[in-house]
Image 1 (cartoon, rainbow, N blue to C red):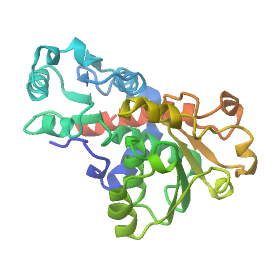
Image 2 (cartoon, rainbow, N blue to C red; image 1 turned 45 degrees about the vertical axis):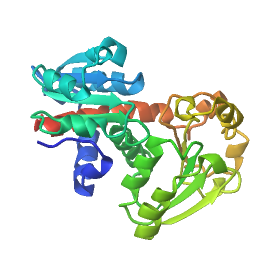
Image 3 (spheres, helix red, strand yellow; image 1 turned 180 degrees about the vertical axis):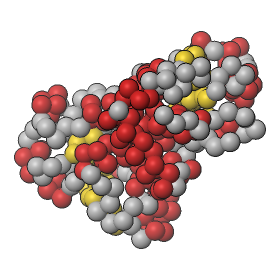
Image 4 (cartoon, rainbow, N blue to C red; image 1 turned 90 degrees about the vertical axis):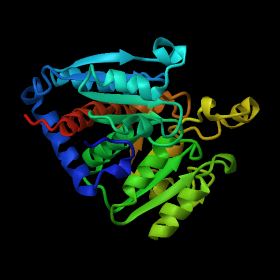
Length: 305
């Protein structure tokens, strides 16, 4: 039984097939309205989420399926001391597929072991967020028309941002990708990614401290928020949270076909005035997440329209 725990669990060919299916779902929504009839998705969210959980639920409902689950650890038996493994094994008797978010790295992987139904990692700590990566790939595919020959700027919290780490791993398998990391020294990309991904694979990259110095080069600007929950020291968070804010002035030197992305939620790292710019793709990005999750659910369940 195949699970999705890490974006690298999928081959490039499998990703391409998911994107193709996502395109068809967007073009022919009515064809998929009952594909998952009588199927149940369990959303086990041990960590709070709005977009990811609702996107999964919306995806399953749009496929004609049903949804059950919980939205925080406090509303599950883990608050009584039940192990994650036991919770998932019990729920696997009620559902056909599980989407799981957990604050601890590796929890979805451990939960998936010896399980007879598919488990989708909906985010595990600062580790992986594979369905956000698929959402990002779907956005780039739809907005740029390709997943190769791109210069991608990653801005903000590159140290703790699991969406950034997952996207780098996924895009590193496509041809002629150049990465530009834009962050303060305290939030720069972890050394292991620089070595294990960029240097090991010979991928072009550079690190800078301001958006302005690289804006004209970028095909994609991927903004991230500085996440308070990932800091051990509140003083460090307060000092750095407003470090990198995208506004209309910074976009003056950007390309006309720049694609501005953000995994959301936004705090203040993108000025609301930017929302009016046709290059702002982050709300479309959130919508694409529903369709790629529909494609993923169908694929893992072995269903077709």
